[in-house]
Image 1 (cartoon, rainbow, N blue to C red):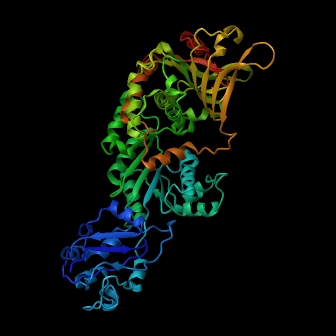
Image 2 (cartoon, rainbow, N blue to C red):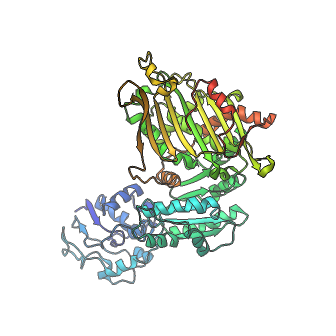
Image 3 (cartoon, rainbow, N blue to C red):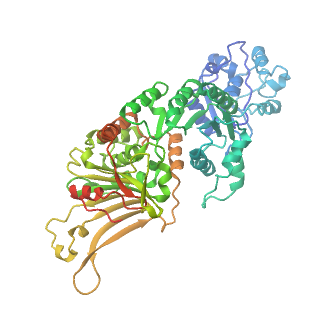
Length: 623
């Protein structure tokens, strides 16, 4: 009789020993058991594993079964699933198995009594029939409890003691952990040059962790669990040695699990290449995926960006690199493609025939000024990534799917079609302080703090439509929004009823991120009462009125990295095209030392920006 199939119901914490009549002393390795990890995990979730094969072949395959389980099963500590002990073993065969001495010796089962090592009570001739349910040794099950349980995901924050890590990254990781978007067995690692202990790091970040208003249940317990899975590595001043130590510590936490690794590189630009290459050489995951997150700016100009890209690609594949810009994690950006491609009312109008101009405004108030004191200036820090990515998402053609690479393919087409920025179409500004009664101008020394520019996309959809950008800091008002202004109604019979300024009658779509996230549509309607007077009103969707909680942008983007969704992260060719667009202005600044126009700190920005808007026939958006 031949054995045709064997069904093994099991939980994550229990299984059964298998023995065989054949005396095959095969090397006990993963290859002795021909089941892929993908197939294993899919059957593991359903708590059953089905093995098929002939009786003459199956006994050889089962020789290393127990050891394979001990080495390959991902026994997760504290899993949210409730695993039940193994209760039955159904064998659809009359074939019997006897223990193999070599196998028992290697797996540590040689000391068991015969009745404990054989599946069933007594498997003598004729004593076992198809359909019998033999018992499983309690001694064997108890032995499985000693198997180390490791992390399935390890996340390392390089630069763990910096302000960004303490204020944004660790709180975002905890929010994901609390919400169930990180596995309970996750390992969190902080890496820096300071001489700290695990407890020191936990104390540093504990004060920054909070539970959201909508998530308060068991907050303290979750926070303690998160901190208990946080570890510190002193990298010292040699990153190769430091990453070796990090790799060893990760392996201790991972155990025998198949684990993935994510590295968040919160480090200065001058240290980025050394850190990334050290990770690539010393700390990549041996079995699962490895992904690195790189903070902007992505270089200083076209040449330095190219050098950085080549260094990263020498150690990682493109799909492993996630260039993060936290402003692209805002709900407004994610909503751009949803509004366009899921609403019939917008898509037919989304072209040069109906749209007069598009304005992208990032106006940072005085309170936000400190974030741009890194010496890169606002063009390299904000314009290169956030502004151009926003325009690309707003104007791209419909992708063939929501896959990240399909969306990136469409974005890079837009960037390649965008005309290089003419210095004559850019206004640079720099804020100045007024010192007391002396009216003494104190200039900011970190380069341009304001840039107004007019961009054009030379393709069939957007030919001739100006994309007007205003981005600056030290201004009177904090505002982040996109304004799509539509053309006038041809032959409008109500033009005399609108008022003196015909631009007041222009329809406008406003996508506002700050101060109050909202979607607004300006339309013309009749003023109630006698007579015929038109007024512009706003149809609005205010998120705060709906009491919708919007996650932090770092939380959103880190979740995307873990999920493998890269559509909000710049690919290498997108980075290169963006630098090419801005190169004329950057070269003008660097080579000719173009003096920016001064504006008052806390004011409205350079006066030249108003003239630039008039030059391109666009009305200045209301403050």
